[in-house]
Image 1 (tube, rainbow, N blue to C red):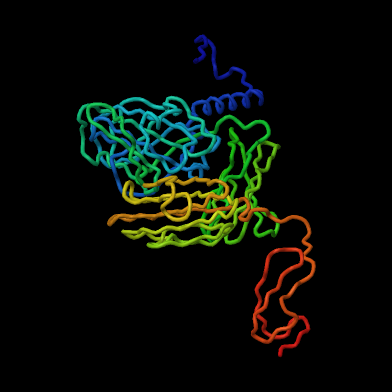
Image 2: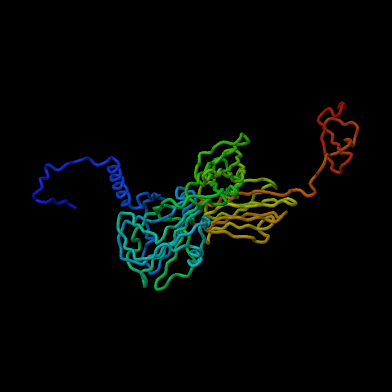
Amino acid sequence: MKLSYPSSVNTNHLPTRSAPWWRTFLLVGTILLGALSLIPSTAVAQTVTIGAGTLTQRYPLGSFYGYERSAALYTTTEMSAVAGSNITTVSWYCTVTGPARPVVIYLKTGTASPLTAIPWSTMITGATQVYTGSFTPVANTWNTFTLSAPFNYAGQNLVVMVESNIGGGGAGGSAAPSVQYTASTGNHALVVADNSPPTGNLAVTASRPNIQLGYSGGAPCAGIPAPGNTTGPASTLSGSTINLGLQNVTTGSGVTYQWEQNINGGGWGNAPSTSSTYSPSPTQNTQYRCIVTCASNSTTSNVLSVAVVASQNVPFTGFSTVACGTDLVLLDHAGNGNYSSNANGYTVLDAGAEGVISISGTYDTESNYDYIRIYSGTGTGGTLLNTYTGPGSVNYVGLPGQTLTVQFTSDGSVEYTGFQLNVSYTGACFSNACSGTPAPGNTISSTASACSGANFTLSLQNTAVLVSHESAGELHGELPH
């Protein structure tokens, strides 16, 4: 507001004085605070982009069918930067425009990789609906959806599920809006239908859409972390990458992680990972653990021991055997490459008297044409216990003393990467395991002396086990003839 003075007053001769320093300081501070208040909260938001492929498909935003459904899984490792934060936006990179279509987006965590062929209603069970509205693709840019409410991401695998509901027989091109994607085996699934929403099972694919997630810090962590067990495989091939994680998620921002490893008993030291996951490639037997810290409270996860073991291939035809107690990695006949057509071989895993066989790992085969089968007993004539086809995971534990047979068959065309299964044993391979201190007594021979090359029998005074021995010279002071 301007000040006015009577016309008779000569303002050139009015007394003047400078304002006190504290008033100037207060005025500047007020201006700065007002300016900061105008900066939107999204200024501190961050983004993470998962996937760098440039091939395109219409999923998850297509409208070629009236009702399209798409689910994509992004792993804990890929999401490590977001852990403890609030997801505020999701974006997909489209390269083609198209008509407007209603879109619904869901998020959930905890689903195992790879995805499985289940109905859409089952897929979205336990999920949070984070967006619903009309969407019109914009070409050659990230198309961003702002969530109706922030989604707190504490950790674990994240599944992003999208419904596109233009209705009727669909509209737009078969490839539009050409969303960029990157191959990720078993981590994308889809189902489509015209005129009404689909009710059949999702088809699992490897064409996972690239995604960009916007996120901001969540509420600070509190209390004492309880990470629980260190998760990961009990065995691996030398140099193969394994994925380690934690049983329990520590929620909130400000959580820090420091992985430690003990290589072949050489002592504990820091590992090169400060996220909630770690993906090493051990070449020696190694123990792993993680220190999780919230403020001044730290807890160490339970130790996981990972054995570096040999591998064995299920033969292309015929059979092979594995002795009881032999931990190993079981591969298809091709090993690290794609398997061949017309395979039909099996491997027998001997359980001995009381051994318990555990089989775990992943596979990627031509769905409904190439199969992994587990039978009870020796060979393929026993009871069929489990059948696996397509992409997926195996987690099977036999009964004490139950020998298992793993068979792999493929048809005449289309080959995939096959399988890698960790085989481990617990329990006793032999019954009536010994105990205490042996007392064999005297060594008893069937003859007091023997000529070179002659056969004779040795036995022990206090056991019924006999040992056959062929003399090759001097024996207990007896000279050969």
